[in-house]
Length: 382
Image (cartoon, rainbow, N blue to C red; front, top):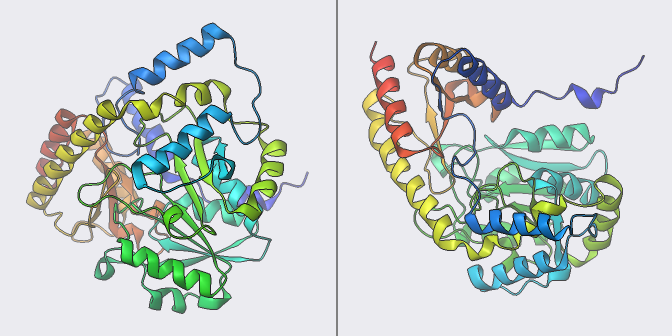
């Protein structure tokens, strides 16, 4: 029987690393998790309380495809409070994680054969979802010379006016690098002038270590903005995200969401209305990430890992390991086997140059990060 080639996309390697780490744990080994971009902190107490209340109130049926109005209104208020930007709730769609938001965006904005530029290195699921939809991902290589963010010259070299879309994450995964406000404005102006749909992945907003991240929603109403409750709000696994949509995409996205998802998880939606009132708890998580970041930036160079991407935000260190290996997959497998430290090979994020990089997530406890550094330094000093 025939099987569609849509399923022939590459594996998401970090999930394979997670499985290998789980196998070690099931065998009784202690694993220090630096492979997965998942906060080790639980959902905020207010969110958990709201979820319990929703269960007691028995309000958990299907919702409207765009999400429950109290949550959309609260997200709208968040843009006013956090960014000083007025975003009507009518332009907000609540989604099944940011993954659902990317799928809806790609389906609503592009046709098969369209060209969408993405950064390399970058989140691999962009490339793989686009490929599964027969939309052509156009990779824009970025590196340390430009802080792992694109220039207008790089966009021109990747196709420029022939592009139909451009997707940029800021802060980025795996590098943690950010577009500065003036850089974002220049890119948005370029996209507007060339009728390129800009998609802004903002799922790490709230987790920054200097200036706050700028939102595309403040600069261009034609941009699609995607965010999630998984990272800053520490609700990974609740499978809840949102989009800020241009006016002309609202109804197409709604129709797609009705047919593909019916609605985002009802319990998560009702609970998430409380997330925006938990800032003190959430900012304490960010303070811990900041301590972990400083620890890794101090300890990794001692082990010889001194070529690091600028970790402006998110909770990742992207390290050049070419002085140790040109096979990051084998390197990470050996690292896990011999030290119990799980990290993700750069091949996941960059199919061309990624074999010379690995990504460390520092979303765990500071104690775990310190122990991981101790084991890593000892191992690399062999």
